[in-house]
Length: 282
Ligand SMILES: C[S@@+](CC[C@H](N)C(=O)[O-])C[C@H]1O[C@@H](n2cnc3c(N)ncnc32)[C@H](O)[C@@H]1O
Image (cartoon, rainbow, N blue to C red; front, side, top):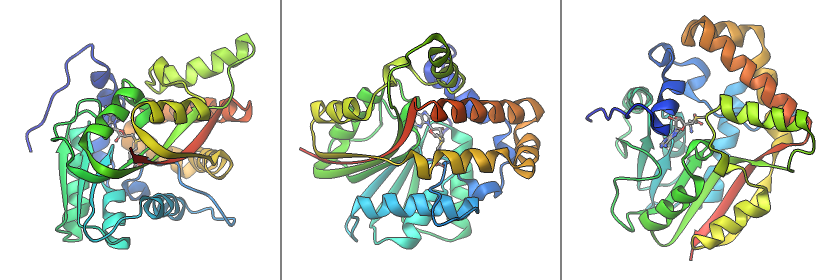
């Protein structure tokens, strides 16, 4: 796989830089997952929460042995391997912006000698795939970065076969900020995290956008209570902060922790939510 370099000044360049700090040191920390996890039944173990989230999304996809799944923003590949091992599926194509993420993803796949996963580098808003290639699309926590979410919905519609299905986990704003402090919180969280302004949507607006782009049976599940507090607690553990500082470097490791604190405040103020989304191509 040839490495694509993103041009300076583009949104992709900034996002690539954000995720590249120390990525070569990641190894098996958190199983290579960057997701927030789904925390239920008193579980306090990160890997279990990460798997619970992927399992819920896998169930929602309704895969079968003929399915060709496109896993957009597959990160370091843990979720591709988990789906291949726990669900009936024909082929999985993992797709991500960051070349170094895909190197880890291949390492994870090859360690388990899994044959039905391939990886492609690119940007989700201009995917190098023909029309009607995939039966299913999964995207875990990537969409918020895409410039823009709507362009990605169009791309999903283009590359999906007729009656194809999408399942996403993503973020939504719960309400518009009602004072300067709330505005500041929301702006700081999204700026630190490289989120384009166009991606601010409430769950209702989100549903409407998908419908406008040619999807039906759209359901947006708001599940923030099972996701955001558990993740913020995990990221605030001393061992986790130390490990991430070793991986990302002292500055980027601590900076990541600050983003989590601001996110926690934003959530507690009732400004943002975590959503699971399912829809079928019209
Ligand atoms: C929060 S991480 C989630 C990764 C993975 N889904 C997981 O949960 O472990 C967001 C991912 O989105 C990817 N990403 C961001 N912008 C992208 C774009 N425009 N196209 C494809 N992938 C992108 C990043 O490289 C990163 O792997």
